[in-house]
Structure formats: structure tokens, C-alpha cells
Image (tube, rainbow, N blue to C red; front, top):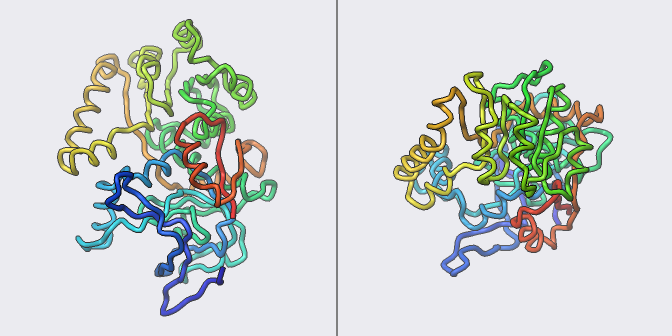
Length: 367
């Protein structure tokens, strides 16, 4: 593949995984090789080679049109152009690689640096050989990790930070006193959340998982509870009450677990499984937002009567999270859980596997 070129302030990037919406029943087709141009903005960082990128469940449904209404509207507003299209689309929200070029306002990152990064949803993603993102979304790659290991961390770490810090208001700078319950502790997000909480010094971490994943969850620092056990509710009650619940998977058990939180103690149940994008895709922007609001009120009403709070959380890049992630990984406090590394040519099978939501840890692509 040809190297990076710059013409009139634009960066030529050969993306190999571009998707577009077609009229076919399946709805989506890969375009193959495309030559795109990104303007190198003042605070943007570009990788010469995106050496590794993780695959997350959100990627597998975005290529089927998930989030088109919200993200398309966001892109048109940002561009101040009602004709701007969300397509072509490159999935992928995090990566590791080597910096090739930086914008004139970037400080502390220079070409040749090895970095980890997340990519905001408004930008083209990381399942490509070159990636453009903002400098605030980058941090140095831990020297004790290889590229696939490093690529497994940023997206799930920033999502966990959004839920635990931005929404649940936990303090990552001092030892939190909360007891935390995590639904889906063996997955990529759950396993990262457990390690972040442990690194912060959280008093008690409990996580639901399958019996096969119990030992892994225990090694990460949480008390595992088999969600298939006939006595799972009794086990959750015995380990509680909880001040914070993080819901990584939608289930009846997760909803029931509201009852295991303390009463009138400002306890919070945070779910990263939100109906917002699905509802706006189905009903349009206005009706979708209204439908989401109704669903939220119905979901949170009963808990609010007992002084418990429920909220949704969304992935959002956070510079403090990225810096802390690099430091914790360097110190060995966070260890990326990589289930398997695949080559780019295996992408269709990888998407199918990740969409099944049966993994333990992260799935990573390399070029």
C-alpha cells in the first residue's frame, strides 16, 4: 500500500473497510478500497499505520444501519450542511498504532510515537489502515504491551469511565467506598470495569458471569456469581447492598437487581444498554427521542420512589481516562483481556462472532 500523502492540507487515506447502505435486502455492502481525504485539523492526530484495533458489538450493528438517524443528524449539524451523509462508514472505535502526522496545534505527540486512541463516533473509525482522531483521544502506549493488547483497552475503558465516573459520580482519584455490582463481568466492558474499580481501590466488586468464566472474574478481583444459578438472586442479596450497579447486558436479572441497592442512599444503577439509537432509527428523530424518554421514565419510576436512581450511559472519549489507562497498564494494575487476535481478512467471520455476545474479553484485528 502507498504511503501517506498530503495535498493542500488534506491527508490521503486508503481505507480498506468502507461500508455503504444499498438497496439490497441485507442493506449493507463493503465498497472495498477507497481513497478518501481528511482535512488535518489543528488538533488532529493521524496514524501512519493502525497496527491493531478491537472489534466491539457496537461495530457489528452499526454496519447494519444502527444509529443512522442520531449519528447522521449529528454529522449534518457539525458540518452545517443538511446534505452531508453519514456514508461511507468505517467502523471501529479504538486502536493502537504509530503516529505519522499531527496538526499544528498538537502538543506532546510527535510523529513516530506509539499511542493508543479512541475515535469519536462522528469520525471515521479504526477498522482501516489509517486513522484520524483528536489529540485529546490519545495517550502513550504502555511499553509493557504489544499492539493487539493495547488496542483492546481504550473503547471499553472510556465507556466504563462514562458510566462509573460521569454518571455514577465515583471518584477515580481516591479509594471509593461503594459496593459495586457488574452484570456481564466476563465481557470486554465488564472485565475492564472490574480492573478499573480494583485499581481505584473499590471496597467490594461483585460480577455476574457464566460458571465457565467464574475463575477469570475472580482473578480480576471480583466476586463471581453465576447468573444461571437457581439461587442467583439470593447470592446477589447476600453480597449487597450495592451503591452502584453497572449493567453491561440487558436482562431481567439486571432489572430485578435494582432491589439490591440501598434505600435513600443515593444509589445508582447505570446501564450502557440504551434504547435511544434503536428508537430513533425506528421512529425518526422526534418520535424516537420521545419514545426513549417514555421508556426511561417507566424504567426509573419505581426506583426513584425508594431513593434509587437509574440512568443510561454512553461511550464518550475522556482525556483523563486515557492518561490513567496508560499509567495503570504500565504499572500492571490493568491487564487487557484479549480472547483472540484476527487478521483483517477474517473480518466478516470476526463480526459474526462478536455479534453473538459470547466472548470472554476482547477480539482484536491486526494488519
